[in-house]
Image 1 (tube, rainbow, N blue to C red):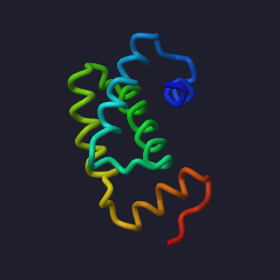
Image 2: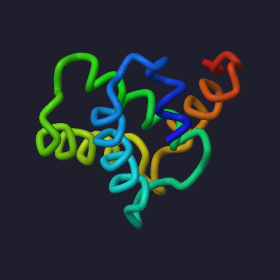
Image 3: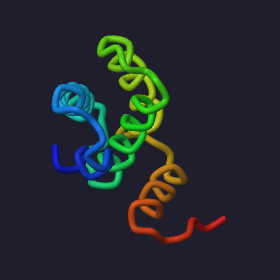
Amino acid sequence: MERLKRLTQGKLSQSELTMLKGIYEIVTTQSWFDDTEYSREGFAVGLVGLFRYGIVKPNQLQKIAMLWAYTEFSKDMPNAQRLKLKSLHSGCSVPE
C-alpha cells in the first residue's frame, strides 16, 4: 500500500487506493509474475498510470492490468526487457 500511496502522491481517495491495492495484489501474486522489486515497482507505476488515464472501473482495470502485466512482467521476459526494468528502477541509463 505504501508504494501506491507514494506513487499517487496522496491524490486518491481511500476507496480508490484500496481498489488499486486489491488489483495490485491480485496481479503480483500470480504464479507467472516476476516477483522482483523492479517488476513490482514497474507494474505499480503502470497501474497508477492506467487509473489516471481514466480506466477507473475495477473489473475493466483489473482485466487490462492483468493482460498488460502478463506481457511485460512475466518470469520468462526477455533479458533485454529485464535490463530495462532494472535500469529504470535503479535510475541508471539503459545500454543500447
